[in-house]
Amino acid sequence: MTFRKEELHLAASHVLENAPGKMLCFFGDMGAGKTTLIKSIVKELGASDEANSPTFGLVNEYHDNSGNLLAYHFDFYRLENELEALDLGLDDYLSSGAWIFIEWPEKIQSLLPQDSVSIFLHFIDENTRSIDFSTD
Image (cartoon, rainbow, N blue to C red):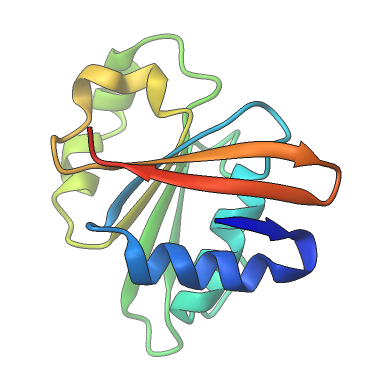
């Protein structure tokens, strides 16, 4: 799917409707729009708060207006090794049943469950991106 910035909500809906699972791993160059797309997905899920990047805290948690858990959003850009993700309690998060959004999943490749969905964001131009899915 190719989309422009003003169509971001359509891309978020497309991901939610077409992803074959709730564990989504976002791949793309710095500035490709991984965080921006995740923010839009979280909004589409009905989160009570606006999503933001968990770069420094590594994980953010999102709930709906009733306080029900919707999703966890990880940004592993600053991770030095996979042990740091395990120390964070990654296994517990992954088994929560919530939507899981992971930026920089290549940093924890051997820890990712087999049912995770890879989403590749491609920079086309300043206002246009494309996304592809893979379950390999």
